Length: 437
Image 1 (cartoon, rainbow, N blue to C red):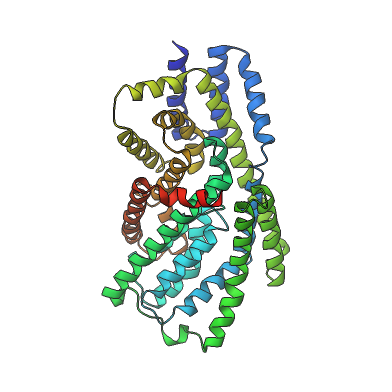
Image 2: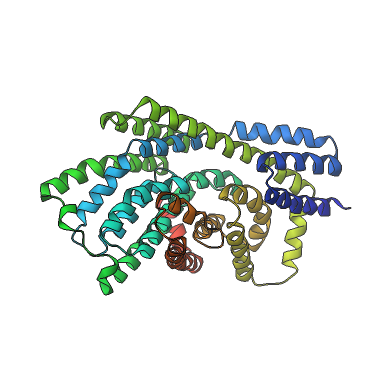
């Protein structure tokens, strides 16, 4: 068996073992060691040492635990509840106001944490009771919550973009800048759709009842000042310092984590049990992600050294398909893989295999990276798996799963529209990074 075919057999074996239920990280390491030793001998052990040491000394990846800690502190402190209440009171007289409040809160929370499950769960706990009391449409409400929750994958400081940067060879600061407009565009599509439907069918999203409104305008101003301004200022300061070049992603993330602690103390929401819980969750998720990064880098190096990546590129190029068709096929593959797999194995295992093909076609890697991010976000809203539905069902058990799915499908169509807009209008992605250079 040639080394190239050996690598492809290893790739197929990897997906088989993952589907059976083997841990991804250890499966990657085992297969890479086995394939590498068969393919090119004891050099594989030196390659493993090099790849793991490279990940441990990568300063960009050290931003991951800081961003996670910042998000968990803001979540546990209850500041997001106050943020949602402020938007709710400000928009109370508007038809479909809660849809706007949910999406606005989700957009800001997405900039604090990239964990989809946490976002959807928190949004469901905060918004679903008021939506049910106000007789909002179940399907539209469920779609709005689940779609808003997936924005954390895309909107910086996204953990996925931090991990993706070294994989695709694009600076994380550029990925952050490139993701802002697509994230705002998608949030705008959600809001516009919900408002239009509520305008033509007011029963889908009636104005809030009198007892749910603020007693005065001064009360609304106070809630906006204390509920929206501090969290928004913290996130803007964190992102602004990174994209302006005043701080590295790691330094900005550390400052953001410290700022979230200060905010929690000022609002008297920081408890020892909450701090301990946030630290343990940060440690658990960070260890999982960073071990996966190291293991997948090692597997990718073995796969590339065997020549399998080059063989795949040559085979696809021999099909003589137009570059745009090939790109659409790649995005379709990522979309389908996004059903059973989380973004971590797709970004760390599949993307490196596809990169030689994308490079050969001459596409802008920054633009391609954001296309992948939005495609993965879309997969979170797509049956047959659609984990977002189960996160929401877990906190709102009286909503039928079929209604949650029906609502998600509406917003998945908006996501597909977003992918097409980015595909045919690359300036949505590339304009802001070019301005900031």
